[in-house]
Image 1 (tube, rainbow, N blue to C red):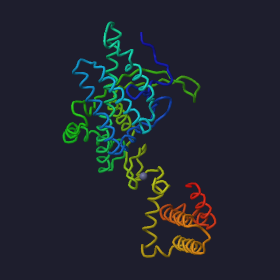
Image 2: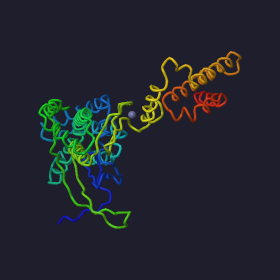
Image 3: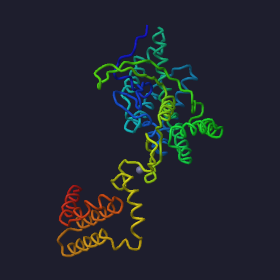
Image 4: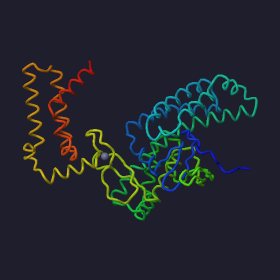
Length: 382
Ligand SMILES: [Zn+2]
């Protein structure tokens, strides 16, 4: 008899995991995520990162294939496979969306299936337990291989699909549905994904996910009672990501590409937001601020008059003071160079961050404050 599940936190090992879908979000590993979040994370993985992941995966897959040809067990190949699988897990563990998973569970399973006492059991295969242990070991290797293949393939899908909906400016539920239908029933796109399969001989993009669904009873803290939810189990990322994509789309959640930094961000409304609100690495302010300010700069200042702005005049004044103090021998070369860098940094930021320019720029350009920071930075380097 199977009873209703009541474990508050489901399993969240990246080779086998469950999510609980509730309204617009899902729970995994005791944490709450908006539907579509992991998709955005996969879209944001760089080509370089995915290439590195595939390189490691292909090596494990070749080894795994040799093992299959030899009947499912070769001790030397198993020893190598354990190393290769651990390398993949180390590569993944700090990057989103993998960092939301319990990767230590994979490490523990690798320890269990790939150790000398298990190898002895595989050598003899005396009991049915030995056989099922060996099956599980092979299944684990295959699952680790599929992480690389599925992520590379899905990254392809989501980037192309996002371009497609951006082209039609589809942001409402109904237009997203029409676009999803058009895109995923297009022979052109689907054949392209089939041919672009990251690792030959592995299953590629698949719109028919393998999902096991069970009811789950979870504590509802708001009403101090029990809530019933859907718990979905997955053994492959492709199955999960396709499920998440369509669950997200059916709620009007979609991915958009930021016009400033080029990163993908999740939208949960049909608003015409064109820029992400995460902090831009280059400028230290959200892209929305940069975009707003770029528009303002375009409208209000002509490029040739940029040198007359109060921000520019203040920068010039401070740079002159630093030069003068340096020639007088008041500050070392290193401190003077650092002070110049700080002045330029503040000025740069004032060009793009309207709020900063209005509220903080002048105070940050106080000469005493600049030297204090410069000395501190130089001291820190020694
Ligand atoms: Zn951005």
